[in-house]
Image (cartoon, rainbow, N blue to C red; front, side, top):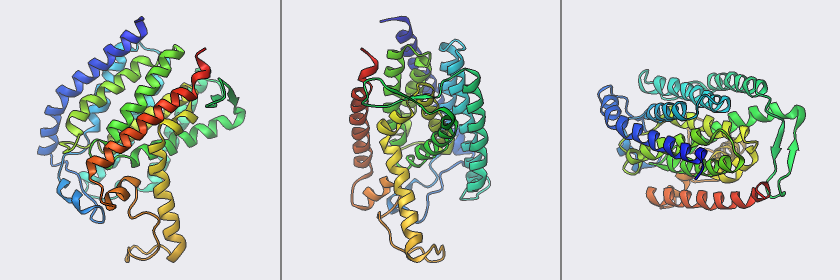
Length: 334
């Protein structure tokens, strides 16, 4: 085992340890502050019992990840860029959670406010990768190692990946342990890809895996804490920035197909609903629906699946997609 792999494992163990120590401290603190989850009344009825479960636990994920990454990544520029994207998106999520939980405004940030923040963050991210001389080429899966140079389309594409991808990861956070476990698998995939490519992102990805494993101990069903938008947006920033720096945003759409499916289910549901009889908030039963409920994980719940089964199936699907992803990148490692 070479040094970079050892460093990645040490980072994972350190982040895991920090998360395991912080969660038992942080959860009671959130409870005392009454930072409890507000469960949507039109959601699955089985989720109503989750009302009041401490949220904003994503703070633990971010602290654990950043601390371990800074300790083991040794100031690598690419690692710092990923940490910027992670923390910046986490701060947007924190503000959203704060408005929901403390200010008691159920919708949190307005959609336009969130988009503006994300546009600013993405612009700063583009500037950072430009200063580091990150090229405009992206890897195309199943092409025996071919890279496509996007040229002037690269930065608009980065904006699309960062904003669309981050919000897709956010939508995946709706069941106990779902987003946490899926993202662990996605980060593990990129961990091994980064190692094979000799990327300095190995310790940062190791730290992400460790932090998420530690958090999952408390987030698995029945969850003692939720990550909130603080965690889900931070994780979105993490996986999207890593994929871009590794020149593999297209691979993210494959191994992170669960994220894509969750996002598409919402877009399809809303589009069809509005196109049929128009949007009428006063009468939620108006309009046709493609899914029994969106995002997609709620659809399966409404079909009679238990929450734990939905989570397990999404884990398995992601694991299989990661195996396919390794096949898709085979041409890189001759």
